[in-house]
Figure 1 (cartoon, one colour):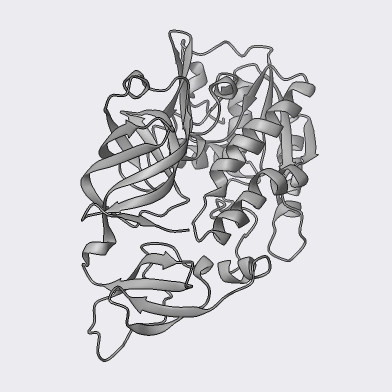
Figure 2 (figure 1 turned 180 degrees about the vertical axis):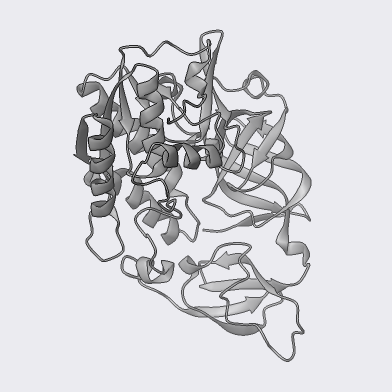
Length: 388
């Protein structure tokens, strides 16, 4: 007999879902399918909403197959399936930003904007039109309410935690959302799906940027932005190769530079440390070079879940942890905010591959506080390094 596994919704701290209409974002993957069963087991009136956010039929997009999988899941579970096309909203609110950032020589993370603008923006608005009391998704994250304020927490499976990508979602949206998988391990989710004979129990997890799919990144980007080749230079100005276009490279990159094996350079790898957009130059260094390391960064466009920390509001230094990329361990840091709402983030340990355009996300233990867009980094000699 299929099992009932514990979900965070079974906690006494969560609202009783009996009879409530929950609009579940059903992607057609295993995570949201398991979330649907968990919600059913708790007595929710589950309606699935499948979103189409990209509709180019180019052989790489899996939208049609994902919709078919969603239909099979809903037929098996006996829940209504709604389908909505947000392709226009996605292009206006997410994809245009993605292209603009690459034009500036930066490295954007569209998944953060997709969550804020589409999955917890346009989706949330449509869910209300469907009579939804609450939203649900298959994200690995948790929420809790403390003194009437919602908090975003890391998932218990830290290898799958997605709070980094959810940091810009509004507190209002989070307060209306449940995350059935937040206290589960991914292995438990797979086993549960198999026990319930879900057709997607062994479906491969989606990775990377949704609209690029499995195609080569350079191939995709070149269809929207013209490549502009130029010189690759060392930090002392020597030309050692040619890049294919600054947009194809990110700070800290060591693969795919096409400059390995030089007789005069030894065996140590090369790393990208800067982009000179004015002169169209990619700047690289070799080995354990000081320019690879940053002691601090400046960030803008802050998003806080709830109120800004009181110390920052009062002009004081604030201590917390931070991630400058999704898979990174928490890093100790201090924050200082200026009158223009810019943050200076100073780290206890030197950081590598800090990329402007990416997000720095702040934590206090397992609580995600919010985040900001990395604008520029501070090198180990305290000079500002800027891309764009």
